[in-house]
Amino acid sequence: MSDFDGAAMSRFVSTFADRLHERREELTQLDSAVGDADHGINMDRGFSAARAKLAELGEADLGTMAKTVGMTLISTVGGASGPLYGTFFLRLSTSLGERDAASTGELGAALRAALDGVQQRGKAIADDKTMVDALLPAVEAFDAASGDGIGPALAAAAQAAAAGRERITPLVARKGRASYLGERAMGHPDPGATSTTILFESLRDAVAAD
Amino acid sequence: MSDEPRVGIVVVSHSAALAAATVDLVRALANVDGGGPRLVAAGGMADGATGTDAARIADAIAAADAGRGVVVLADLGGAVLAAQLAASELIDPERRALVRVSGGPLVEGAFIAAVQAAAGDAVDAVAQAADEAGSLRKLGDAS
Image 1: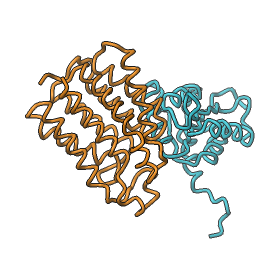
Image 2 (image 1 turned 135 degrees about the vertical axis):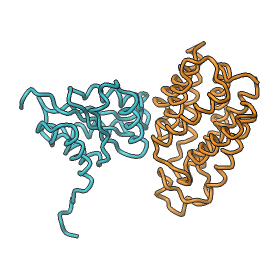
Image 3 (image 1 turned 60 degrees about the horizontal axis):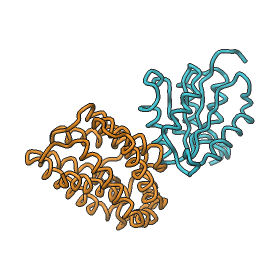
Image 4 (image 1 turned 45 degrees about the horizontal axis):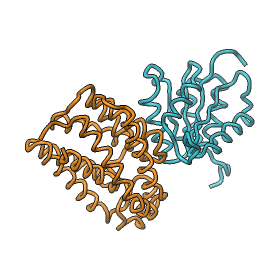
């Protein structure tokens, strides 16, 4: 398995955009139970725009590609997911820098930086029932499996994200609009943890498709 | 009113109409025309949709900055995150030290910030006044 390069980054963003579009209604349904019913629409709009901007950008280093995605999300998503996913990609950008390809360890460091950025921006910790509950275990699983190479590390990350999303479904939310619902949010899957799970599944499949 | 620059104020809302109307209201009530603080609205998305856009907020901060910094008021949830992203990562790095995102309420916070800024206060004092607007007792001291 080769390093994570610009073609893999393009496939990742494109795959994620496709899946957000396909699952737009599902995400909106989840968000209508606990939020303002815009997560599916906002994410679909943002990542469709990001994919188009990447196509316009053409060949570029990984940092420039990730920055293009982040800045597009900031200006097109509209809800809280804009600054959060925007920060995720801006931190990937800073960490990946001018590299044309990243090793498994470099990708892991970039994902860790992205996690730190999302936590710094949203102030969420584990069990607040947010995207962090999928993102944090995914990054930890990636690190733990990185010795096996990028494919197995991303497979472990995607599995951990999905498990994290399942794990918090029974909880009361402590951040965002869902937190106003108190116990009424119990049993509802979190929309942000769901989209983050789709992100890691897209990343896994984009790299496996190489 | 002296010609000394004032701390600027940015009003961020998911709604372009609400941000613009808040600025108009504050300008009228706080009587800050002429040499007063710059008040800039950053509401809605570029295409008119409901939401917040951190890049637009960053542009508004730059427009509001007359040299003594900017206090940003935001309405709800994602607007605060977008304002913090704009203030900490998107604006010119050398301007960041003089930008504050207030946790105060939109209308009261913007009003009090405008009054303090018009009086010539520095950015920290203006931000503190905006923050404290949240604990004002509208109904007086009766418990």
